[in-house]
Image 1 (cartoon, rainbow, N blue to C red):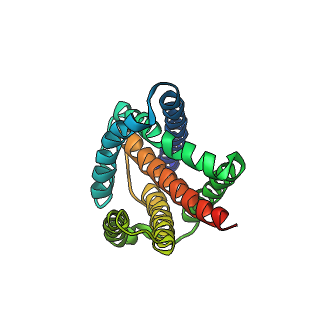
Image 2 (cartoon, rainbow, N blue to C red; image 1 turned 90 degrees about the horizontal axis):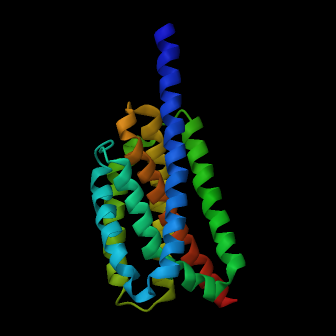
Image 3 (cartoon, rainbow, N blue to C red; image 1 turned 180 degrees about the horizontal axis):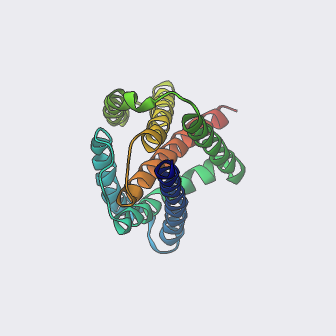
Length: 218
């Protein structure tokens, strides 16, 4: 009985650390955006994105294997670089839609992410079986997005955005289930928090795309 309570307390403590690091990554990403806005010309922001893109691909591959240990410094560096690379995108939507709709998009993203995370953490269902399907869907999304560079169709790009939200929403269910149902140690915390951070950021970008296209129709 004592061991049960100890393990439960230890697991809850690790989950709390994951949440703290997740919010820390969001904060560092925001700092990266401010830094990029102040010091990095938009045409050079993509250089920072190259590093974050490489990590995104690595993260996509390693999602098939439980949790791959990453150092806290590496994860924070990824969040900072991603903030720099994302600031031109955010400024674009800010100019096209206005600050109100950008904040609405952030609220929608928070509601989607928070609702799915809460559901996955409370339900008895185990979503870890989705790993292979989500990985295949992510590869398909990347390939379809690359094709999208050569296709000028609002319907096509809206479909990509909805597919992106669907896949990364699935990853929220998957990642929370991994936290809840698979053993992990304190060394795994940075990588787990990075996974959740990537889920949130990607959902946010795709929500921005959808809201932007519907606002332009109005």
